Structures are given as structure tokens and as C-alpha cells.
Picture 1 (cartoon, one colour):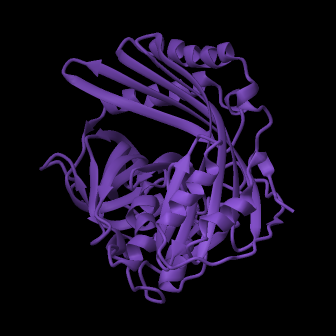
Picture 2 (spheres, one colour):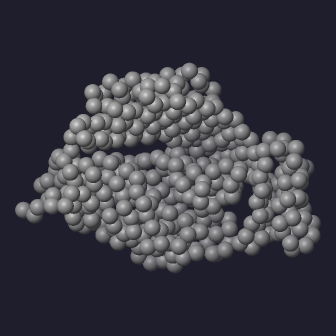
Picture 3 (cartoon, one colour):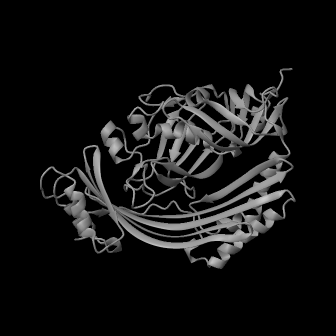
Length: 468
């Protein structure tokens, strides 16, 4: 019997796409609704509400694929003909019968954001603006961004299964700029996840704005950061920039398999210190990178990437799994029906240890405490990175001291991960939209408090902590 979820003739399209040969065919259907609001200069600059549906069709031949997509549902047979025409193996017939797999719930959504009155969403944005502008006379600029979406996908393939997945998401971001004399500093605070509108009841806009402006003001009052090589403690609140950038991208199988990662060919080898275990877990309910199934219809999984310093696995999609002989990890992701799936992180984290964060601080006489990381850059081929410190403090005699500004962390991923000596028993999450090959997907990352005994801090020459 023809399976026709959402009115799509999946079996027919899969069969037609393979009429000229191929190893595997796949249909990806997507329907999404969402709202995007941007507020600047105390007024709404943009309010966009969208509803969109589309379909992508792929035929895989070896480690190559032909892909086409459309939002014209009267032209699906033509789409299948287009993809089939790209395959030159010769005509054959393949019977396809689809087994529907059970829905896997990962969304923690009590209030569907698409059912919330637009005026209520604007009210939330305005509340954040009002709080931010009234926070301090030095506030010079405030930007508030709100986004929500409900994305329903159906994936079917010629291997004989069909799955449905629903991904609710919400993101709320406050960015504040403060100025005093010739100094200008920025504070940034994002919240979000696979959640509904109730997230802004649990974490009100005023509190989000307060955290952003507090960070900006703290930095405005701070001294210039020291420069030199010194111990650094990364707080669990710092966000997972280190794990995401310094190791996560390098463990995506397309990069690792092609020799474009410092971690290429390192399975079974030591790539971090004994106290470091790294996992990617797309199954954790409520996190921004969570999903029941990936965008190829494979179940999201918990993948141990590094265990006690030993590299155990890479993140794969169907093609990299087949090409490099690796297990499927459920990390084939795409931005939309317009894109092919590629290996991507979901929720990536360094596992907690046993030490209390304050115990780790006591092990540093003089150094830097990073409470919040900013953006940065990493070279996946050699592992070199530069990360900004959004909120940092001096460590003096094992305690957090005065705030610093203008600091960066400069190092090499494998070397730094190999040098970490102490891991806290806490775990803090950050959210983001990860860009790769022109596609953006929602992710979360996390880490416990970490002690790096020696790393280069970029700051003001001559103001490094003195030995004493």
C-alpha cells in the first residue's frame, strides 16, 4: 500500500528516483512555521512570520549523491525524473515497502509557540528593551532578538523505513552595548532550546536583559587583561566553545575522513588527558541540538567520542559511514529541505568529574578565570585556535579577583585538551547556531569547570600576573 504521510507518495518517488540505478534513495519532507523579531533603538525593526513546506529527493551512488528539491508539490514526479537522470547505471526495478518507525519525543514544549499571539511575543521583546535601557546610564545600544519555530519532518528511504520527527525551538537573545569615555563594551546573553513559549515564563526577559547588561558593565569597569602564558580556569558557565570548536568540528567524519582534521586517523589513540571524556548526545530532552531522528531518518544517539583521553568515534552521516566504514551515529543534519545532509554535532559536551569548582580554583595561585567565552576561530587541520573571553577575572591566591577585559585564549586543541589536569563536578550548557558548508543548525554544548595549567592569554603586554 502506498504510504502517503502529508499527502506525499513516498514509495513511488523512491522507486522512480532509482529507475536509472543507484544504491539508495531518500525523500525528505519538511513543514515549518516560525516567527522572527528583531528590536533595536527601542523599536521593532523586523517582524517576520513564515510558513513553508518543501521536499528534497536524493539518490546515492557509492560515496556520491544527486540531490534536488522543490516547494511545488504538483511537480514531484518531475523532481524524481531530474534526480534519476543524474544517475547513469542503467534502468532497473526495485520494490519498495515502507515500515513506519515509532515517534521519539525529545521536545519539552508545554506552550506551542506557533499558537501564541504575536502581540505577546512583541511584549516579551519590549520588556527586555525596557529593562536594558533602564539598567544603567551608560547603556548606549540594545538589540533584542526573538525566534521560534515548529519544524515537522518526514524521512523515507529505499531501505524500507519512514520516520516522523517534530522539533520545537525557541531562542531569545539580548545584546547590550555600554559606553563610558572612550571605552565601549558589549554584553550578550542567549537562551533557548527544544522548548516552547513557557521558557520565557521560567526565565523572564528582564532577567535575560539584566545578565547581558551586567556582563557589559562588569567588563567596562575592568582592567586590561594580562598577557602571557599562565594557568586558566574555565568555568562551567563559560559555555562549550572549547569543546565545540577545539575538538567537535574535527570529529565530524567528512573532515576527519578526508584528512582535513588534526584528529584524522587517530581512532584508538590518545588525543586528550585521562580526565577528559567527550560525548555528543542528540537524545537529551529540551536541548537545542536534540532530535528524535536525524535528517536521514536514523535515530539520534549518545556517541562517546573521547573516553578518558582516547579517541573512540567520529560523527557520521550515511555517506561518511559507508565511505569510511564507520558506524552510523545519527548526526546527518541539514538546515532545510534545500540542503543535503552532512555530519554535524548535536549536543556536545565534556563529561563532569568529581571536584567541586572551588577546589579547582584553590589549585591556582595566579592566573585567569573565564566565566563566559565569546566567539573565536579554529583551524581544524592543525587544531590551532583563538577564542575571545567575554567575561573574565584574575585569580589571586586561589580566589576570583578583579575583572579583566580585552582577553583572548590562544592555543592548540589537542595540546590543551591533553594538558587539562582537573575537571569539576558541575556542567553548564550554552546554545548556538553552528555554521558549516553554508548551512546553519541549532546546537548545544557544555563543559564542567576545567583547569588548564598553561595556556597563552592575549592581553596587555607587561601586565601578566607576577610570580610571588
